[in-house]
Image (tube, rainbow, N blue to C red; front, top):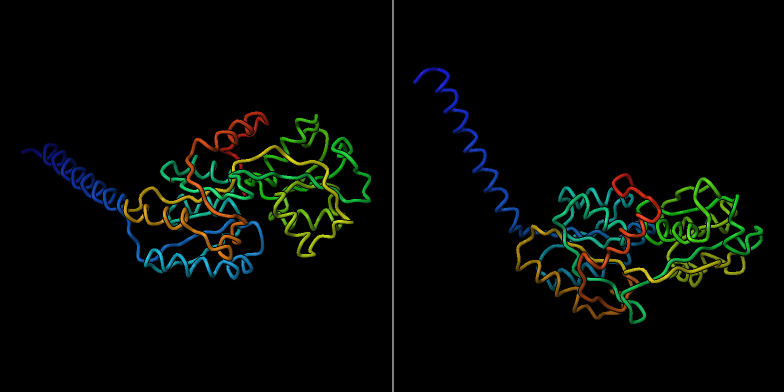
Length: 295
């Protein structure tokens, strides 16, 4: 065998071994059964508060799944998407738009349950305004500053922005806007007059008012959106089938009101990827390139 033939055979052999190793790793990954599950909560409020309030969820999941469970709150929606993409979390509670973005970047992930609130697997967004800022209607937002939440938020960016667009107001052309992060930051900024209007989840706004964080006399609701498919629970598609079945059952059979409060839900219903096509369609209406949306 000459040197060229020897090198070719060596390279082919190495490629074969590499291919076998890759196939082995892929097969193992497709049946992942980790000793600890990392469960990410939506980063829409203070992280320490979210984790503290969700401790009953951790205890419940550990009992059902017979595994250690670590609750995770990432710094923002974008880092949560990347954590799912690179396998740093196994289960996540995504916002609808952040799920669509995650699915685009990690096609193998699987939505399996959706929160049900007031008997429905949908929710709404609201556009709010500072009561004494001279903004009494959507039309009055023209020329003002609007606060949105995370760029990858459904009810604190995509849907309120689409609502304004349907009323003839296009961002940067008819009004200025700024991304403020969490929903509560939007409501606080409107109340403080740092922005004259803002968009966020109707349920989160109601909760902020109920807790006294926001004074309903200082902030008014200008409009509410059409129903939006609710927040999905999502898992890595590479998990072992038996583990996926157990995770799915744990959420679909969850009945404890104290635990469900973490998700602002009465329970969970089964869902799939098709339920979120409406968000992809809305992004097209706004000419919003989802591949460029970041948290």
